Length: 379
Ligand SMILES: *Cc1c(COP(=O)(O)O)cnc(C)c1O
Image 1 (spheres, rainbow, N blue to C red):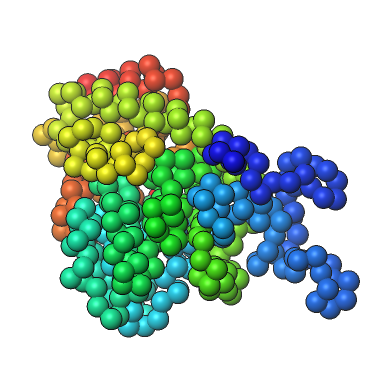
Image 2 (cartoon, protein in one colour):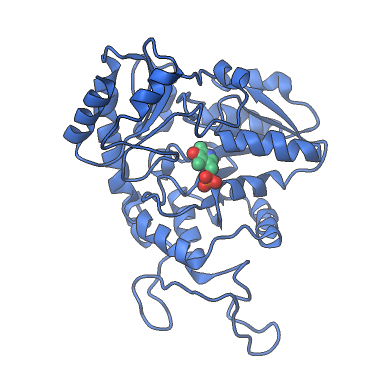
């Protein structure tokens, strides 16, 4: 089946007990057993729930994966992957990560004896000198947040395979509509479902999608043992949102391109980061591994200090000043004071996350209204 058909049907059979076409919200924590251990495959909703299972199967299908696990947030999913590791193990990751990923790596897992190397991943060969007998996992994000660097997933996957490392790709920014890392050799795809997959800024959820059976068993054990699993109402909302993922992504890409081209020549804009531009350093790789360039755009404002940047960020009428991304509504974000506040100044400036940087999540409103809003806010 093709993407749009899977988004609407995968994992979702008419309900066996009533014929309901839409997957019901199974609002139950526990399940009847005929005699001890004799049940219908469901025992307790921390481990398994039919509404969540339908969503997991649908998300797995969209990433061309066999297995899906939903978590109560993207960070819950990341936490589960890191718990595959043991004290002394080492991880190689990017230097332009989602702030929460950086925070959980440095503030939580470092404490348990796991060592992280933060590298510029734009040249995959630069990973090789950091691989040693303790290295277990590579964690990448592409396009990166917020400076939209593109990492060559296939090239990193080749290195991971050769050295028997688990490659995990945070695919949140691209969504499964634009990029499928498993097809390019990744072992685990992680999503903040909160963003494009949910798509309506009304749910916080995460997911892991993968093919390897042993890895799935290990992750399911952590999922059930640690218990960061989402409830059935949230699973239902995401099942509803995911049915239009392909339609929304097309509109995000279309509006994203119009906004990017408008801002590129705007006199108040200094740098612009969007992988669809031919002069973007990752453009060729993006063209190779993505089916579109998405609606995430970052800009720096010309000659703007923190105060001037705040003034511009607060002057929008259609774009909403808020954290997060990937919803139908357009959002504007100031990474330094909002999403990336937990990254030390020196670290983030190395990655280009400066005081005058703004990140746009271009939504699916009418493009004329979005362009007019940008015009008045930048004036
Ligand atoms: C939001 C986000 C996360 C964290 O997901 P939550 O659902 O907020 O826990 C991880 N990675 C990226 C790229 C994100 O944008």
